[in-house]
Length: 288
Ligand code: SAM
Image 1 (cartoon, helix red, strand yellow):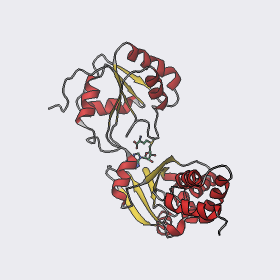
Image 2: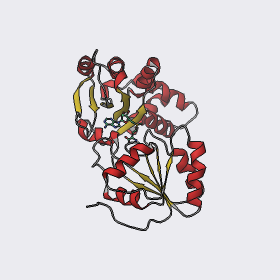
Image 3: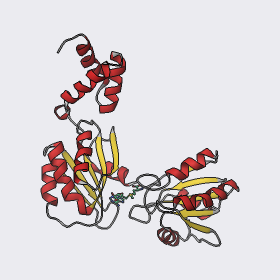
């Protein structure tokens, strides 16, 4: 039995999300698109071939074009030429959703500038899978993607996010996780909640929830493998660095109205507009 239908796809680019672990995590519509697109393109052609094989989809005489970070400028013109000729092109990342910490952004922009159609076949995405099970607030979140390799840059990145109210989500390599947790504990404070989601949807899925001081102990000196999403709870009221915010409001007031200053700083720090407005009014009126 096959799970896809024969359909006529309209011309355009289709971004297809693929499993982040379990091969059955693919939508029926994604299979329809992969089975019927005129041309297939993939970040990793071997991975896509394997996925097609699992789901009984034959490549037949269709082209399968490799498109990744290192060959984008060469591969893009080929894909654009197919689109110009009215073909349907399906693009898949190695895993998860294209463009999310993965290639596809330049391709998308060029396709949009040609006024060709772009469609999403949504599905698995590691950050959403992690957020769903973490147990941290989901109403507001911030996705940073991969953290920098350099330790002091990682620390700087965390410092910039310390007052952010939303749940923070990072893609991290297993090798660096223990170092990163130590830095996170130092910057956010050991009592902040964190969650490590490893190997989601795979056989050895492992989710550890706890305070950053506990998590950094759990992973201290541990040689772990696999793919990791790290989540850190957003700032509570006591974590917000009000002196830093005040300084920004003072600077903003030099060139902007109270309303605009409050708006700009509230957006930059992701803190309630009302609180910043009150602070700006106080500063403007000369109060402390
Ligand atoms: N485009 C993908 C998506 O939609 O999530 C992300 C691709 S990015 C190159 C790969 C990173 O995603 C990994 O280093 C890891 O941080 C995270 N990731 C991917 N699959 C995962 C999984 N099964 N469990 C935990 N994290 C995963």
